[in-house]
Image (cartoon, rainbow, N blue to C red; front, side, top):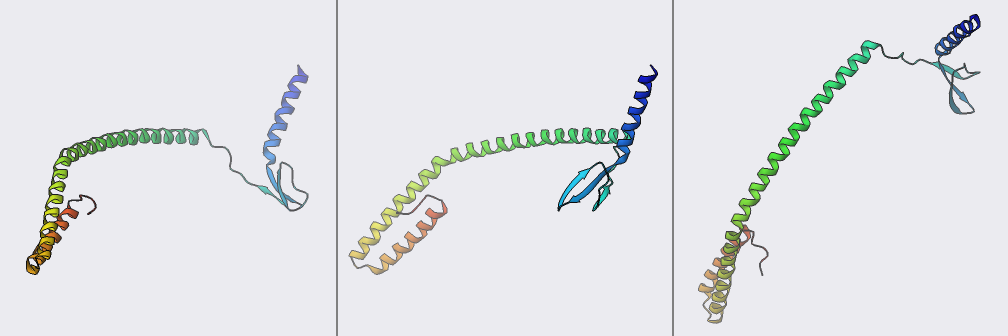
Length: 156
């Protein structure tokens, strides 16, 4: 029994001694090594902070919990914002789809009118009616501006 107690005391003393020794940074042949014994030459003891106290650990855990709660709150907000944005985009898409046939009809009528004006201008050119041809060309230019503004696609 006395031997076991003696070994336990010596073991605890050795463990506490090893923890108190510290860590040394040594340079040997241009290489940096770390060891628990002092360096023969060219080394220095490293100071490293002691482990955190129970109060510090508890405070860090409390901060981590607060941050997790904040992250969860932000995730809920982001999810709600994405849902709201998706609904708004869906409504805009439906509205655009509802207006699309009207736009296509409008573009078709502009194309037809453009063809008529080009035919009229060419006829005026053949008949040497330069004033009428110039007026028709002005009408064509205005119509093509409307066509481009309506985003009807490329002009032929």
